[in-house]
Image (tube, rainbow, N blue to C red):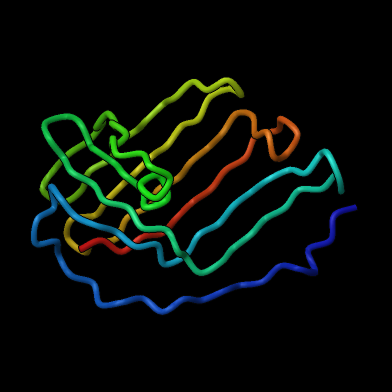
Length: 146
């Protein structure tokens, strides 16, 4: 039986919303991050985590490509930005997707940005995660861009 006794609501302060000065090139900082994992190796349980965001990314939009570079990738020596295919672009918003095949399976990243208020969401879904014994996993980040 699953217990929801651990269910909690966490609230994080929201900075002032404002439109982006240059919506085709900006940097974003995570306000909150969340993750879902299944631990089939040790505890045999599903884990959900919600925490204050620490991730930072930079994006650049050129034509139908959204160039995406996370601070974590940069710090490990990756200098080439990932290239998301833009599925929707308007004066108000942009939505890009990256589908990658890895030795463990597939990873799908989705990035959506509201240009009017600078808020964005980045989600990452893996079909198989080595750290969780080969089960699917997901992460989401709520970001403020400027």
